[in-house]
Image 1 (cartoon, rainbow, N blue to C red):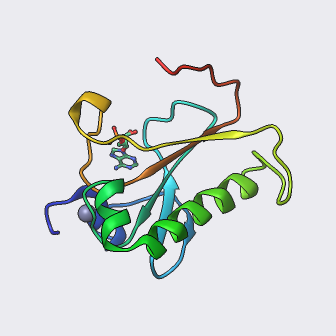
Image 2: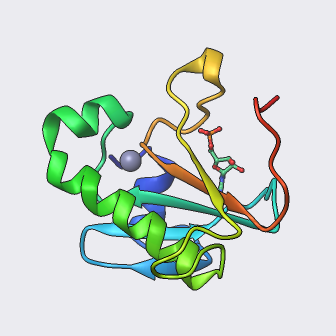
Length: 119
Ligand code: AMP
Ligand code: ZN
């Protein structure tokens, strides 16, 4: 979609601080980080939200989640086979949840204590 910010980042039309890329998944640092590590992980293909992605291509959803974990390992938020210190995955769907970009994305957050429930 030519008018979608994240599609334009996949296409290289808008700069992104890329930390992980495959032919189907892109991960880049959030421009307004809410934690020491704040990375967005997206499918290259446009899907509006996580439910739409799951319905259209569950395999791709799995690739996005696996990429998010790989980013967390690379950022030393967890070890490859461990769980410490930890990280959070967030995806917002719809305006009441605060979704501001209608291209599904996982937020990978870590590097500080994260309270629960989130604000
Ligand atoms: P959400 O509010 O869940 O839709 O998340 C959208 C995220 O995209 C926000 O955390 C923004 O800070 C982030 N964002 C917006 N524009 C850019 C950009 N050009 N590069 C990186 N992150 C961005
Ligand atoms: Zn898009």
